[in-house]
Structure formats: structure tokens, C-alpha cells
Length: 137
Image (cartoon, rainbow, N blue to C red; front, side):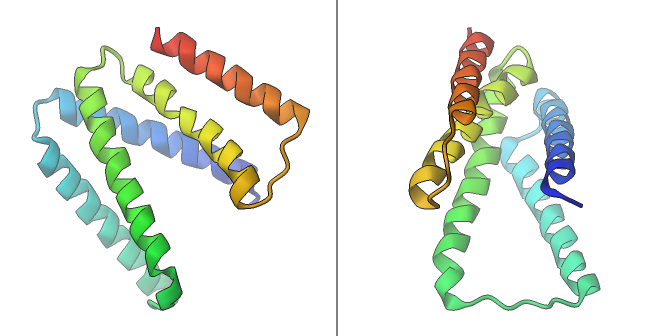
């Protein structure tokens, strides 16, 4: 499967996740308990995936820094999203504003990974910023 359908599946999964988290948050559940249970289940799913695939667990020490940064980022996404969802009138507003990450990743990739920034990508970034502005109003 190419990156486009995989990205679409990831987007749908993110939407399902946001809606389920909204239901839990609006249901009055403690944010810490929500995070603990969600992350525990994610750990179980990934551990099972590793066991079934036979890949085992091999991690070069040189990658530990990036593992830590990714873990802090994942925790922050969940933590701040839950706080935002708890007070937002519509979870779609939170999802719209967090989509600003696509703009940050696109721009940072130019500097970090020597990615190409074409005119059409620049226009897409501008349109994304306009969309984020309109959703946040």
C-alpha cells in the first residue's frame, strides 16, 4: 500500500480517536486515567504486533534520543488535546487547530531533511493557515 491510502487511514483513525477521547472527556472521566488506559492499551497492541511479526525488539543506542523526543511529543499530543477537547464547544475545532502541525512539519522538513518546497506546496501551506484561522474564530 502506498503512502496516500495509508495517510487516509491514519486520518480516519485520528478522527475516531478524537471522537472517542471527546466522549470520555465530556463524560467526566479523569484525564490522567484516560491517558493511562489509552497508552497501556496502545503498548499492548504494539507489543502484540511485534510478537506476531517476529521482529522482536532491537533498538540502537543512537536512536534513544529520538525515541524520547517522540514519546514526549506523543504524551503532549494526548495531554493538550484532552485539555482542549474538555473545554472546546466542538472537538472539530481542536482537530482543526492541531492540523497546524502539517504546516510546521512541511516547513521544518525543508530545513531538517532538505525537502523541496514548491510553489504549490507553499500555496497549500497558506491555505492551511487560512483554514486554521477560520476554524479558530
